[in-house]
Image (cartoon, rainbow, N blue to C red):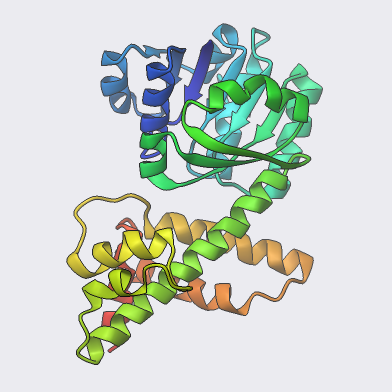
Length: 289
């Protein structure tokens, strides 16, 4: 199929590469054009504005940083909604505010009769590269069925969660679990180190037990041996935890554990390491000793 893709960051690039490998004709746009170069060599086609994607493609996928970025891509100058073209379905893989998602979905339908699917992903860059992402979707179920074969280029699990906004709420549940678990793993490593235990063996020792998880197996090595690359940043996690806190306040949901974890990510930002990988959460604990 011919598809458009906006946002060529850590997640967007491997997702586009998977689409190309699956045989799709992919048009791409990114705020900074240099991030598209590697994908152009693989066969992607560059456009200068999101509006051009709306002209060429029935389906456009977004994976940008935050709510404002999504709004700008869709409704900003030369945005997707500024032209009447081929566009029929927008799939937003970004992690943004659920209420804003519902508002933008309604506005896009009223202006252009284009379906909006909020479809944040989980699985990180490794999942994108391997085609094993989990996608949680809010929006029209028939529209999802149309686009689902395309999404399977990089996802192994696609779940419809309800109306627009439901996908974003589900992603916030995901981020709550991930952020608090990473904080717990970092604390467990710190406890082991402070008591003379080989912390780098924790994932091996706990494998198969109740404490085992994908995160434990992935992040014990990254936290104990150091990491040179960034799979997901501390600031990105903080952005999502701030959204969790706001939503919890609106719904009067008690979330003391996620609030405590949020403070650790706030400290990381204050320390100037917010752009670093989430494995660097260990530095926050080390700084408090």
